[in-house]
Length: 196
Image (cartoon, rainbow, N blue to C red; front, side, top):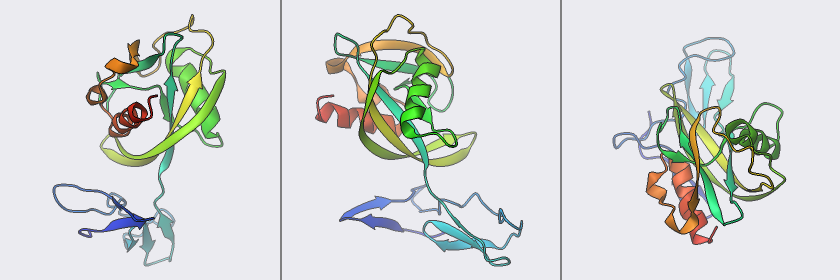
């Protein structure tokens, strides 16, 4: 375990991970080499581990996830109430993880259909936010890609998959603190600054 390391990029400092005042390597949960099974799998640098037996180096990169920003004709924002952990019962935006061999654009369209029953007719990339998503006690580092999605027909709107409820909220009344996932909360704050 290293203490106090960060990644610097273009005059910005990003803390890799903070737990109870100490920094832990993102691969701290990986004890064995995925290639040969050796327990001689040690920290190589801030984003990789190396097997001292076979020489395999594993780089830890974020998983791509997508987020849909959808408005109706009244300019209200479509929000979901999470039906499952993490952050069960809190607000969210439609979205999820990209599948293998799928583009981010395909993923956001698929996730919108799976969670809302709606079809995206047009989309535009907005921005991205790094996140740590804890699922089944395992920390997944993600890069959440936000898209503005246009939907022409809302008649098929239905909460599905891991969504408990769908609702439209006036953009002026959206409260970022009600969103349970850190990246979505930050995304809502950023959207409010750019006036969605």
